[in-house]
Length: 387
Image 1 (cartoon, rainbow, N blue to C red):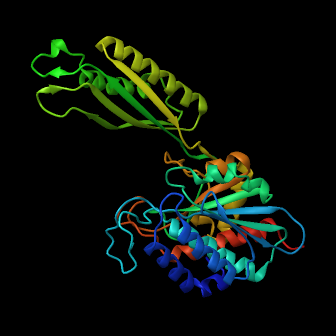
Image 2 (image 1 turned 135 degrees about the vertical axis):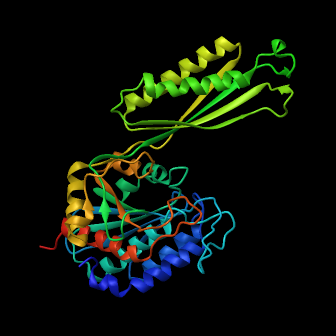
Image 3 (image 1 turned 30 degrees about the vertical axis):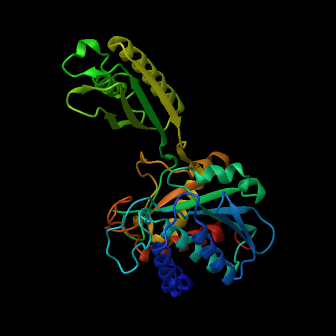
């Protein structure tokens, strides 16, 4: 059976929760209304050990099981994206410039569904720590929660998270041991030249030509400096310069995203970008300054916990609906900060044939919430059974 019967019973409630959250998206750390909604529901389930204001608007709630045992952490992200929604749904976002285009409304709902069931049954030993996290999309709320001592404060021994995946059928799960999501860095290059009249380039130090050459040289990092079997993506995504057809500007600005898994690969990219900037700047008589911002680390699943999570998922979904050897993704996820400190696993759960993540027509599939909630519940009950 794909979902637990009791969870199936309150699936309409979960749908109502999720669609309410969808209408009221909040950005970055400003998830106060979402957190208040979460706390209200947790209290209605009879959960009293609730801690608010972590990483500004994060919430951690503890459910005590039957007898002594370890603490399992279950995490859901709460924040939305700064974009407008085009779904036309009855429950579409009511907030201009914000929408749940990544399904965090669904992730929060799945964890609330699991909380309701676990609070009713408490058919496990030890404790469950429900971690509702803000600011996954941009600033790294997980890092802030870790720095504020969430893992130690609540004695979390291992931790798990789910993320919906468009294109994967509802009720299916996939993951992989080891790296599953990439580290994400941002490289910004400022080219300082000397502008002048477009008809008199000999009197200038043209930053436009230098910027174009730098971008072309960046492409050789993958093709000539990088071992083909080590995952790496470098995408130049912005070039800004100039104001008129007859004016050579003073400056040009370049930005790129860098995705990798290995710290040695990351170090190589930084070194080559510095060398390219210095060399190209010298050849064109300009200055090129690199600002390299290291972002989220790679999300690395613990091998044993991933195998265990896959076994639980197979119990929920069946063998054919669980892929435990999926290809890693080059997207990034701040759950990496939790997995740097504690063993655990990050899995994808199917969202069906929907618009892609971060698309203005995306919507979380409400049917999938029961599958995610059932997974969380069985994971806890299987890991820490009542003797």
